[in-house]
Length: 329
Image 1 (cartoon, rainbow, N blue to C red):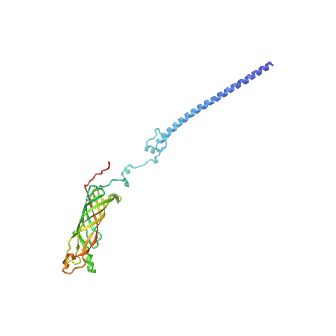
Image 2: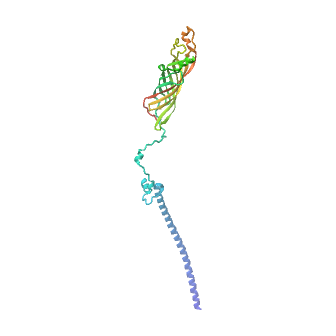
Image 3: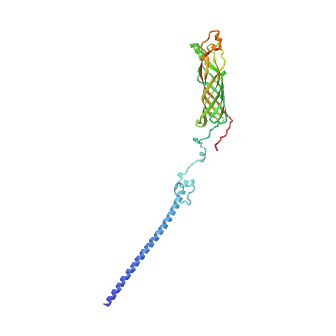
């Protein structure tokens, strides 16, 4: 009986001791697990930072490499440029014959805005030309002319011009043939000379290509003025008694011109100019003697508005020959 009681006491003690130890083991296991988790988390964070740093370095190396790709086995990001491209991909390496490329001639269009090729302001223009009549089929009045202009600004000029006609008037042969065949006479006049004051305005300038190899500068202008023209009728109706003298008439003129520059002081000019005035023509009737000797009966009592349209071709010489660009400060 005593042995039975002692056995129960020992069994109870043995049951209590393992239960306490097991609770302590559980707590230490939980603490150990928590510490292990914290340690693993720290190691994972450290590993992540290291991996991120390594990844950033790799990306930096890739960005420094041409083409945005990392060169396998490259020690220094960036490499040697074109030589590295040729090493990596020989097919992408450009194969150029530098001597052949240097000898090529390029004919590329120019789009740059240039300064005005030739300044005209404060320069004199000496313009000799030859004029040809365009609108008179019965008699023509060609002749040499000369103009002297001064440019107040780069687009505005004033000047003088004149033309000499007397030895160059040409009567067309069919006039006499018509008179003999149809008994119809057309009054004719011949010119001696003219002189004018003129003013002009350059309204356009630019350049054009000729034969795809030459570039010429040009400008276009309007011109007009007033002056005097001296002429006289050619005696056709009564050449035996009539002998006309040159008389002056007030005249006006207007036209348009084109100037093509050869260099900065020489240009080729063409003009289309109309000189207009009130003209006195020969009378188509003959007075009875002795009035037929009176010069007042030789003229038609009416005046006729006359246009002498001319094409003028010449050259322009600008003086002084050189000039300076004055740019705003």
